[in-house]
Length: 249
Image 1: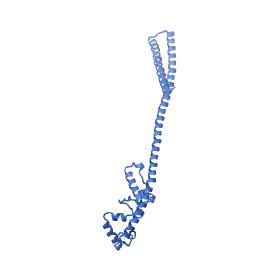
Image 2 (image 1 turned 90 degrees about the vertical axis):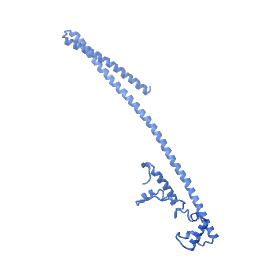
Image 3 (image 1 turned 90 degrees about the horizontal axis):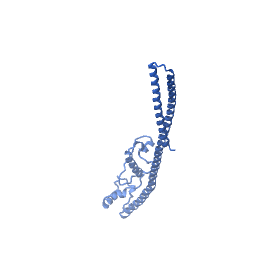
Image 4 (image 1 turned 60 degrees about the vertical axis):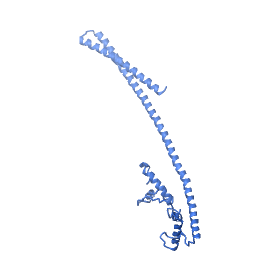
């Protein structure tokens, strides 16, 4: 028998017992009224009065027993109802748990996708910068050979007024706009940012190393261009991220 059927049967049993209790109460009240009427009238029918008293006592005993049955039925119904409520709550929580498991798996999957993207994309960045470095070296060597420039750019400070710097500047002017950037910017991020755009580092508070590193995420793992690009992206995301999930230490 299903729990719902048990509850319906228990509710009906309680209703039936309550109906019977009402009938017994009515009969007892009638007997009591007759007894009181006889006493008030001064009746000497003691035998009749004794019979009525006996009936009233019997009804009172039956009523007490009936009310005991009602209490047990009520407790039984309440127990079944509580069992149903608990079962429903358990099923609802199971659904929540299932949803939480699915959400956790989804989040783990997204994190794995991020890791896979980084493992795929960062080597491509490194490979591109290596080709860039080789091409830059070849272009500078070509310029020095073709235009008889005596000194390599790497050996000239940017503020130098030497003949070598003058020769390079003249070549830049002759080549046109963008030439100076193309021939002077380097992919070696440990010495220069080496990007067309400038990625400004996040302001770091003077604090413990672990805290300061948190201000520029991943600085300890990547060189300057990569770490600054990642730091900028993380800072933008961080600004719109709920507080419990923001970065920093």
